[in-house]
Image 1 (spheres, rainbow over the protein chains, first blue to last red):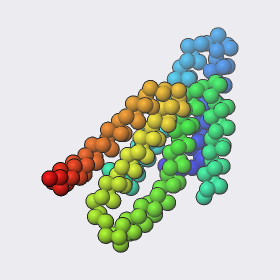
Image 2: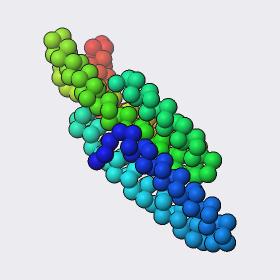
Image 3: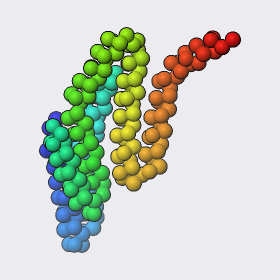
Image 4: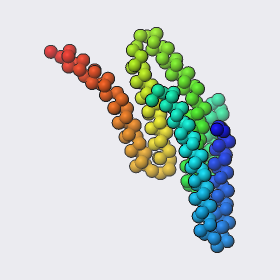
Length: 66
Length: 127
């Protein structure tokens, strides 16, 4: 996994890109496509977040003998 | 180390503020990831602190299972606080208080045997 600030920047960049794409699509009368882009971006980010949360919880489990 | 963590926090805060207007869900994701990154960076230090506590308690002759229980309780409260802070950040105060409650119950359940042992001891001393 890539740790550190990279991951924060990656997620923020995905958020910005989705916001821009959403605006573009909504402005060109394609609201449903904009919604699809938003949902896809959210799913991608959530997958990354879930992986990291799993990693963190495994680390805490081994660290504190839970 | 500390400067690095503070810098990461400031940068992530700015990113989250930028994202909150357009896409609040991505702001929440940035918050979660920032918390995970900072905690992961702190893991080695936490491990060192726990080891020194263990060594000190062994020298003082405290029974090891008490220290093990203490460390477990610290871990549970750590995870609980992490989850409830994220929920509170996203504006879900009700979910946050439920996570807090679950953590309290888990800690109570973990320490119940010791509590009852103490109570039995007191009852035995009483005439």
